[in-house]
Image (cartoon, rainbow, N blue to C red; front, side, top):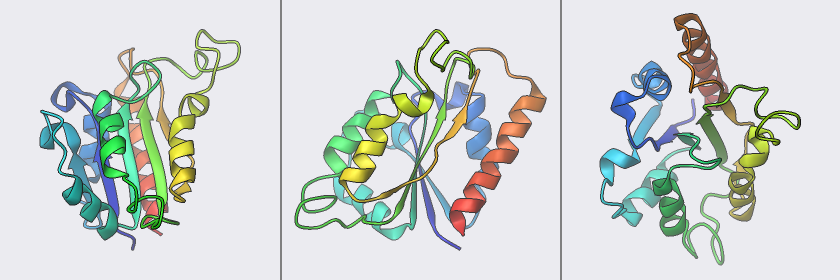
Length: 176
């Protein structure tokens, strides 16, 4: 079973409904480490070596976050800028080469909004292009993202449970 690192990047996880439920569903999996970046680095002073060690100790790397203005929360950009440095992630050494790179994103809009004819005019996958680009640049293996839609509406318990069930399946699939 592969070791999975979930880099949770939610500025307000305690008040989250969706990301909190998803994270709680996998928090006791023995092969999963949840690395809560906002809890660890509320001042944005990232321990680069610690983060790099976590990346090296895990087989699969997941970035889980709510979509903020068609991207990620600010701390994730800072994390990429600092942790994925030259001679670690690219350059003379590609220490993460071939490791699976996955994105788990929760979006306020529904699936229809994220379409050519919807209000956002693009799919979530298109908005996630910088993550695909980063993954390719550092020679990681970009996986199909896990997307949760409609979080700006109060999702029913049935819908939340279905997303949670599907998330557990997604994690288990990445574990193989």
